[in-house]
Length: 158
Image (cartoon, rainbow, N blue to C red; front, top):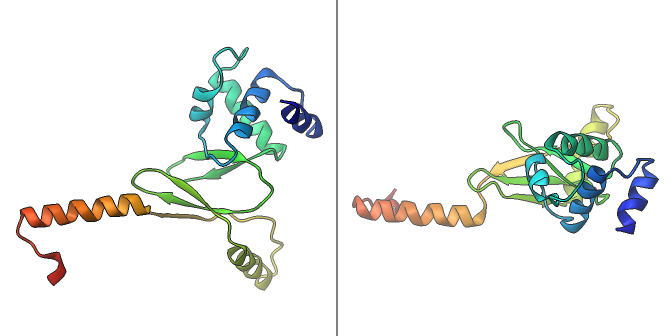
């Protein structure tokens, strides 16, 4: 809990019950991506004066202070995560919604090179790659095979 108060003090933020509860949640789950609604549902119910609106305010303030980060993950969906001090991109599964971090220095170097080649001062980039995770792909493959077998279609011949 001391780390939460120290983070807020460094950011020159008053430790309101909402800010403390929200930041504590991200410290508990440092690698999770959460929407504002998910954060609100996970905040302990005994937290004083913690409405959905106060969670949104706390999230915006914590992002502005650099303690957490936000990313647009398609269809007007924003997720938040603890700022671990490293830039990264995301893989998002279209089927199950799983979000995975891509920590790739080569990708980061490409972002910097693209900006430099265009005489653009690079500060950050946000890359989101949409697709299907291995589990959903395997599930889809097996259901396609089952459906093909039911209809007498041999997909291997195509």
